[in-house]
Length: 114
Length: 116
Image (cartoon, rainbow over all chains, first blue to last red; front, side, top):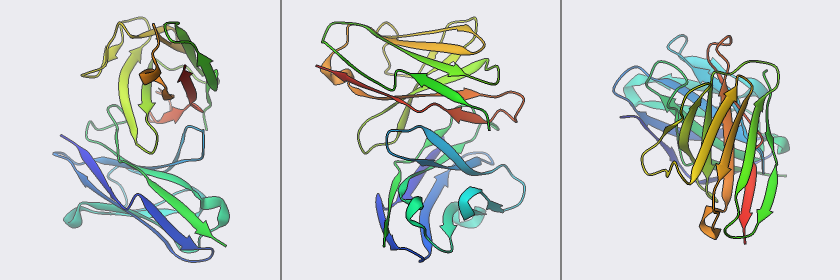
């Protein structure tokens, strides 16, 4: 069985500060891992994905995440927060070797303070 | 990236009526689409997997007679909430899998259903 735990349902950062959103996963096989962003009343947009290649994954909008097998983590970071980064972020895992049966975390709402 | 469009983006209906939500892949053919339900301040819950030309596969606990899914073409899947009740009010999101793009999922904008 696969699962994802996102620590912190709400995170607030100042504009220009480091963004760190935490995600830990559980999977019985090497997983695919994803970060999605959701703006109010919209669907999800893929930020980045890990599919067993490089452990440091770079995504859109300056975000990146590092796969750490020893810690079963896939934390999302961005060096400098922008106001437009305010949104909800979902970590997701798939242990089926693809995009089927993706399990989402409960989400972290990022607030950026001017 | 590929575009998936949902319609309507929001709908209000009376209790007991049925509502149909459409999910279209605009620039690719999707043999597989997924329907999710998202409760306020919660994550997405997979409801069912929609396969073109065959019956949908429902997740445990999802009533297939309540949530009718039809995937009649490679670009369209529909979700019909039958005999809707206030507890069916939710944000429904679809995603489509692009087989030519490593199978990546592309999400629709979501449809907010309010049942009075």
